Image 1 (cartoon, rainbow, N blue to C red):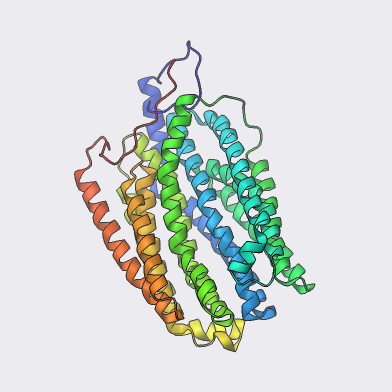
Image 2: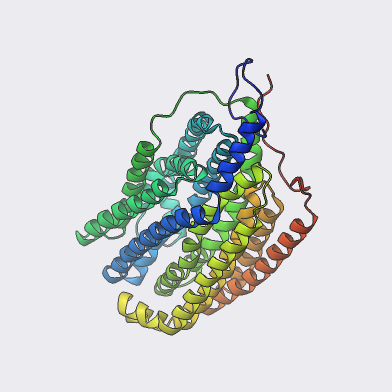
Length: 458
């Protein structure tokens, strides 16, 4: 057995019997099979489509009721939340991988203590982020040319809840319980849309939309807490804490690169473009990033399944190639739809100021599709403990940011910078995958792979 999460009594066996190991392998093979994953992933995908549709409905409402400059302020709050997602998704992936390894070893009950340990750290990190937003609200407002500093304060209140709930989502993901996980996204969307729409309709504007965000964090935290209730007691060993920290570093690197690539352009547009143009760009980015958020359901499904297969010595590349085919199909459909109908739809939904964006939207969706495929490859390798692709993703973020700063003068130049950067990123990541696959040993002990999780020394 490769992993033990908790300290054990001396009279406990160090490993299961051969019959037990065979049963565990059979269970993992069954649980991570194509039909099972397709069913669970479909449910999760439908829920995330519904959640994104609801969030887009909210943004349609904001686009109608707010001026372009006010819409840019509201979108800034969402972008800041997405920046904090680097921490939230890191916590979720850490919890998911360790929970999936425990499930593969037949020790799922050990995950409870790990989750509590992570939740305490998540709460502290959320408090730090929240205080940074609240105490520096005036500075952030001036820097981003925002009308008011109050939305930064409101958003900061929800940060501890946002980060804590991500650990519970990771546990659900690692145990392949996709139906409850899917429900958390629906709850988050429903609360956000109903609260945001009601408050904006009452005249609270950007502040009302931000309250909707914060209230949705609190509601999701309560729902996840209920789904993961009745957890048993236990203590996380020092050895596992060390493994957590070792794994957290490449996960953090991956998510930092992901967030920079996915959101840096909006921040640069908000900083350097005039308010109305920044608002139009925010709408293009909002719609264009849909490909990535829809592809996240594929990554969420494959991540724990690949980790479980690797834990019992099975290959997982087939999962990756199937996922890439799904994401590529999503991207092709979205790019074609954006080119044919993007400007018409945005013009009808948001107003005439957004009507001429079909071309930019299609190119933005193309860049995002390339990034979604590169991100899926990197996430796959990270689920197996390999860290080199995450470093490549960070390099892609640096290149994109540099090109964005050079082309910061217009919407077209910002999008061109992203297309160039994402083409380079996907080529390098795909080449890295081929090299790692070709030269990895049958025991998956490649040079860039993190050491297997060891149990606590007795």
